Length: 611
Image (cartoon, helix red, strand yellow):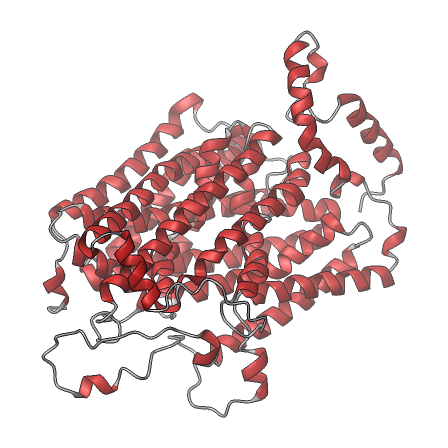
């Protein structure tokens, strides 16, 4: 540790800034626990009473997936593999459009609390249970990684106490989730996005001052081959190319935006459908801002260390520690600013964890408790939701302890999402887009997709792909005026590629490993989704899926798309005829005419066989 002390370490002010961030988050929770009569019903607690507006929800959506994995992982990714990562900007656009135009209309129209309720309405209760259990397992695993990873990276560089940080994060999160419900989660996220942008901005500004301007940073990056935006190699084994990022990335992120309970729960809590869609599109801007910031941080990392890489010269032991290392290096003369950066990494964590906890509580109450204990009152359901928040908070801290035994983080987090999210995305797409899909096909598809993506995912963890598949760019250490003996230099050629705990070393590479297991991690969810869709369609057709009588409100219809334009026509209409109370379709978008709604309701009650 004494070597890293040279570059500066944490002082009192840094701890003050960090504690202040935790404190404000906790205060927001207390405020929403008592504001507006508190959390009367479980609906208030889990859905914010369906009264949120677009901007805070948009910021909250941005914050919750911008975890510390993004703050620490993306700059390091850009530093090692180049700015290719910024093509995700295009991916985000597709993801947001798909979520807003395909999944949102159906979920919003049905007014559900848990996305998995949809699976029961469309298929049957067994499939809903499968979906719920998969989600709970995936989220607890992911949340563990998200709490533990930044704590570790920051601990090793700044000497910030490891388990103190983990427990503090977990406890504060659980605290405001339990007291304030979804409203507290959304508003703390808004505050945390502010902190994250401030943290990024302080690094970028200071880096450009020390390196001599943005142009210097960019010219360093381009001479180091870091501005490799266009790599149109169609080979699916290549880790990041234009196609893997656009196609694989779109599937991976759609599982998060389109169907992941923690995201859907938020945009469904908006007060009408227009606000819900708007929140997704505003959030797109937020995603672009944060992506730009983190890519730029990665380039400034390279510019700063292009001739002396701290990772190869053993100053940091993991790639994820590069970012905190840079912060202490360039900001050591500003007490409190490194604290701001740590607060930035942690607010990423807090927002992700809090949304996960709230979503887990919602899913548990809606899917596992309500259907089986019908007699519970709203008040007691609200208490149960709060109890669930505490329980899941504790579980996630426990998971963080388990995550301490696992390896490299960004990939682990994303492959968990890919392996579990892919088949689930396939399942929802079957329900929403394929009118003849039935429950037998859906279940078979889910199992098939899950089996295949687990096979690839676990295979890739055991036998990590070869370096020529991942294409890391060169890192130089000739500029380190290091006075060590020469034995260190030899170790620079072998790069620690993957730090998976379960790696099997020096085995014969078989074709299976070199092709199937070397698949880009972004394609895990693509495979899961496509296998699920394909198997689901084939089996539904062969088990008489076309004969079933479905209520069209469970499917995506032409009307859903056209109603985007109704919002404009109707707006003036509603404003000019305030005297018609009927115009307002309740919680639904005024775009759906009330007469038509009633008509479909009656007919479906008569003909529709409830599956």
